[in-house]
Image: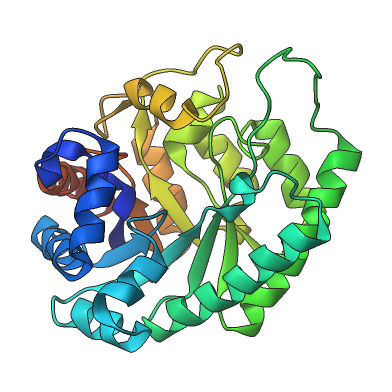
Length: 307
């Protein structure tokens, strides 16, 4: 089984010798080549082979700016025995009006360019995060019903067609507190999207945060899994958790090292293994203070399940 890491794992000030997130961005801005070389060296030293790009300063455009071209990024990876496993598209949750034609056109254009970068660097999957829900009972209350889901699913299908034209599979990621993470919501969007163009990236910890059984949910859509995020959680989060710009920081206290939480890892590993050894399994450890040690520990634990 092939293991990689999402670069969000390196989004911790301690790793960069600074005191907050803003200083990480400032550090990257001062010397992008040095920033990305340190990233790739750390991934190499962690023992995994794959890289998943994500939001800035770990964005694919940042990598191109650091090395000069997609081909140069690929060369930098290959020189370290690495490859691009996948790229995470964050744009859907960053548009104020995702239903607008202008917003959709921007995202389709970004996905097209991103897919070309992924292919140039040896990858074949674009993982996409879905828009967030609203806080429970926050006025005006919004529900995820058939009409809402059908409209969004139509756009997701178009997005999947766009990436498929570039040879890249689009996979929906189960981000907690998004419209695609509670078990019923996952089932709904899996029903409404076309399996030829829209695939599945289950994230074990995020499904658990929403009160779901990660193995049961993933098993219902196993044939559509083309990549998986491996992460553990201690418990589900309260239904009235505030969903705003700080939601991702609210998730972090519920995450824990693999094997110390509620994910049934033996069953999870069996299910993912059944999809084939060529599929990427991404260790996503969300801002670890010592990311290299955390990835090594997670990789060793995952390897003990899959050997």
